[in-house]
Image (tube, rainbow, N blue to C red; front, side):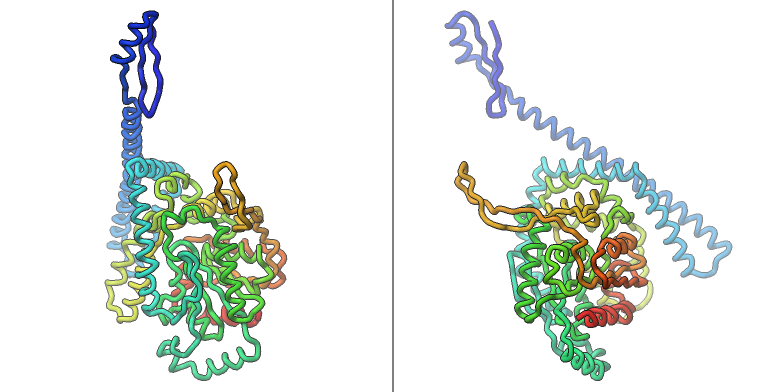
Length: 518
């Protein structure tokens, strides 16, 4: 008697056969049995994933505990020294933050910690996938996308914002045109700007500057450039006589997870540029990109130089090999495919956690430091407006995140002029086997040597998100432009946008630069 084992629909079927036909018939009818090995294997695989996730999470939290313990001992030693010799409390506060910050920065860069961090992300992403939490997140993301785009964001854009009009809407992406009238000025500006504004208006009539399109990154929201009336980049440039437009990428859903960088550069941005040129009757426009938005502006300018008058990048990573910031080091070490396989897009809360983890003491200290002294109502509003923006993080589209990580952070193709992005739809191809039509696309190589227009690179000297040297490398990579300038300002990454000193010293210079290159 022989056994035959077959596999069907997740089960193993065991059949018995012998030389006796009656015996075969009896056993095949009555003794044929199904063994749910498929479910057994699934359970064991799930248990293995759960065990790995628990183990890696335990290692990660143990590492964090040890780092905090080391930092606490340093804190106690510094306090002990202070009680013996120091008298200046602000000096103590600064010293404590510096010493503790250096401990975390050094430990977070250790290869062992980075390996544990990468394993923790990988194992927990697998756990999220097999438990269905990833699908649940995508379902919630789809609903929250509609809620944010249709209800929350329109209300948000009316609070303390420069008046604007939505002049174009493509899917979830919107193009805004800011109103150029005196109602957009703050009381302080209205009181002190009569003569200066008349001067700007006279200059504008003589030589009208090109319109400016602000291109923002996919992380956080675009309104950091128009946070409050007193610290608004948009309002500052409007006040100087520039015609301002801005992109708003909206809140993506799980359905958007396959959109590419090329889709945004060669479809959304290109259509926006053409529309602005049509509205303003301008042959070319100026592009102003912040952070990753600066990279998008670089890509567009390299592919469509005939439409760009001036290119301005702000705190934009260029040579990613020179970017040794903590987030860049972590990003280069992780396998983003596990995150995207589980969630579709990169959750905003995951990005916020990474931002907070890199400087845990600064994260917890800033609230105590702010509220230990009384502040006027304007300072309180500005503090909470900034904090709201910091945690108002939409998901980052999955394929775009993968392209940035693989092509920029890991392979550094952008600065080498070897990065390829999708051109967009160039026609329709027919699949005769499935009788379906699919959009035909092709890739374009982003060659920074094709950027020949005037270029202004704005860098924050104390930027801890984008290494200043990474940004400076752009001036060397753009070889065909004979008009390149570099503005270095004494601030951090966000301070360029909302610092009062920046609005007093930096942004008037930027406005003058754009007008001088009209």
